[in-house]
Image (tube, rainbow, N blue to C red; front, top):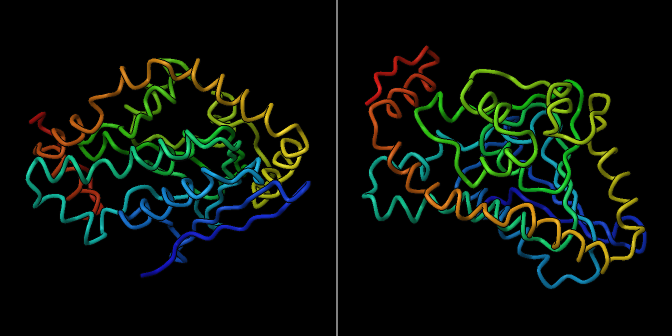
Length: 268
């Protein structure tokens, strides 16, 4: 089995920074089901880690992630699944973002190149996002006849408000530049191209120099207050996604994407 994720510990002040690198060495860093599992396992590996205060998550130099891998064999098998099997398989994404959001450590995403779909969902689950100036975000799910799930809507809503959330999600073909992402509040810092990781590490060093217990407790308090109603608001995420996946529009959206043509949606 190919290992897409590596973990390096012991960086920064008192060795309190860890680096998680996600790189499929293919230039796009798509999130196959196996990649989702490995990234989830990486987050969970810090559950009993008392020596790490900050985790920096980075993709490749050209891409944080292109989102879910529509060409992966396991991912493509979804169209043959019955509803029960599909619902269980669709929990891979929410499980990933929940694992990263619930980490006790402060988490920082270093984004270069493009960050699309599931990549955006993953970045939203982290505490901070640092983005290279020539990078961009895009949320294409609706353009593929799907809904944005993985509890991403409430996370985005907390950051940028209802109108911008609708703009980001509904206008599926719109690229959100680094400057726009910063202006909207989707990212906390924009750097020169190629320097997102360096800036993320500088932020990580500042956090790691603070008292670890106070930092962890503060994160927990803020997250519990900010996300108190998220489960209530998005508990149907998976079922909405499953329902949409049975629509003709979803089939058309995926076929159009793979065929590099404009989709023709009919609302059914």
